[in-house]
Image (cartoon, rainbow, N blue to C red):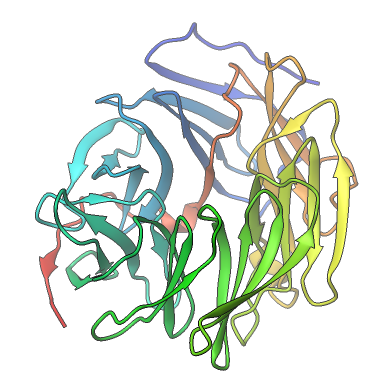
Length: 362
């Protein structure tokens, strides 16, 4: 496999790297992950060299999730403000995304239908709030969440509802107007929500506990029906494109040295063993030229060797996870295991500007 050596480890680290195989001509963007005070980025530009870049987060805070929004790249941590990253991934400083100096839960959700960013905000001694930042980051709506039984750590969106995730509880509320939440006791730690959609009077939530599950939430009955989709331990999961009714047909997972492809319509699971290599967070990237097939695209992410000394970026056909990678890119430094990764298409990287919001209360 071709390899490339770059400069010695510094706070800033940029190097062009060679690929083994051919990067698909319509795959163009960045894979970004954050861990141990560093942001790691591999920029894929078909027909040109692939660039690896790392930058130290300043100030060094425990941020571990990245979102592209309103022409900016934002990094999120646990009960911290959002931090803006420059196009070169340097830390520009905190962003008043929710206003009033409030900190944020680490996993905001972007609504592709409206362009809005949904975040959970809070401050010491204050109730948490559901904050909706408009596309273009011109306005924001603050919706206080009262009587929360536990601290909200995550959320999921359906067309009409918002699902709040907390240890031991799931909350369901309308996306509009006053937040009136129905809380359902789960008795388990907060799951990692993968996808949610409306199903009549219920909400269906696909989530990771230590395994992959489907929860059907019944607000009127204040109950949950839990179904196991895959008993194999899973660490990360990503959905394919959604159908007309808002439901995905497929999702992809990684865990314990394997990649999983899950057909949700027929409850079929396929696993491909990468042992002794260990896959990280492999994300689904749709192929715009094959829009007629909602699941056409690639699985892209970091794969570590057994020793942890080397890391590759791999591009895998999402429809055939057992085939050899379409392309591999050797990374010129080890990358920590367990990074949550984000794919940012080149088409979502407009001229950079800082978000500036004003209050627009309902």
